[in-house]
Image (cartoon, rainbow, N blue to C red):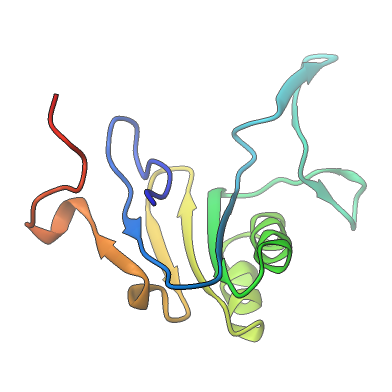
Length: 128
């Protein structure tokens, strides 16, 4: 399974699981404009408004999809530093990507990574 783009026109890492689930949450989908404001579906419970976050996405590996989805959404809403702490507290593995494309690995993420563009190996994507 390929995790979403890290930067425009780039491949994200491929992950492999024998069991469990991979979920991704992002404020870059489910967006709209209202009264001149850009809004999205990830609501900060402290404000009741769409979260203001430096994260473009959070991908979480977990034992169950519903749990991994909650952790991914909470990490995006919390932001980078608090999101990293949240992932660690939940003993999860995550890939957090900031709006500028910087990748941050949390928990035992490397355990699940099977291929990245920087690894020098052959991409699992077929040519053509």
